[in-house]
Image 1 (cartoon, rainbow, N blue to C red):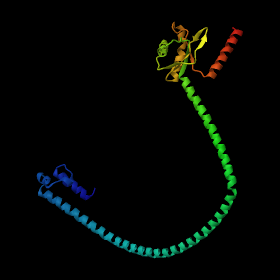
Image 2: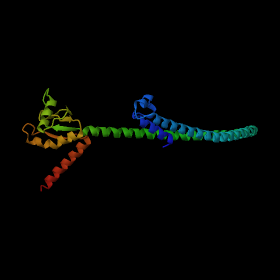
Image 3: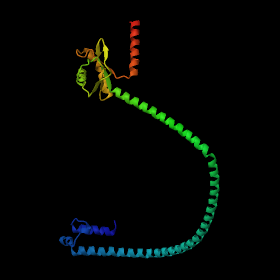
Image 4: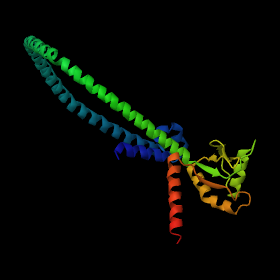
Length: 278
């Protein structure tokens, strides 16, 4: 802490006002009975001493920096003169360099024209064969792209159909009636399985005559997600114990190919059971 700061703190503390030094007013001194003339004289003498020291220090700095400033000005003047001389020399050198650059540009232009003439002759000679080869390559690429696009569409279609089928199941054995409320029928059946999902239902196929009567068509039921459909199929065996739906059974929504494969497996299983009853 400097002498000036110590003096400021001492004077501020003597007022007893508790405010910051820059906010002390003359009334703060007059209100305090402890600040006598002797105290004020002491503060004044200390202030004069501090100010005197500061003025002397400033003069010393002023003298010191004045010398350095003069030296810096002299050096700056010398540098300015040297810069002007260098600039004059550089201007002459730049002009010479510009002449050399112009000469090089003329030479490069002549060489470039010569190379262009040679290149034109070479291109004219080979462009026919190159264009034919590129057209042939392009045609092959277009053909491959079209084939890949067709394959991709087929794959996407199969995936979408498979996802739709995974949300559906088939209901067999439910009697078909005229003006039937198919939605209510399926909802009642699902309640037997303690299920109440949102469903979309429809009969599929055309009626087939069996023993003089039209056989009831199967019902396709679609729910919101694959897990819901799977859960219902897992519970379907409970319908065997139902008096109303004992002859109804459920199966996954299979493609025609899957149905044929399953039919073959069932036939093979029956054959083996007959041949090997144990």
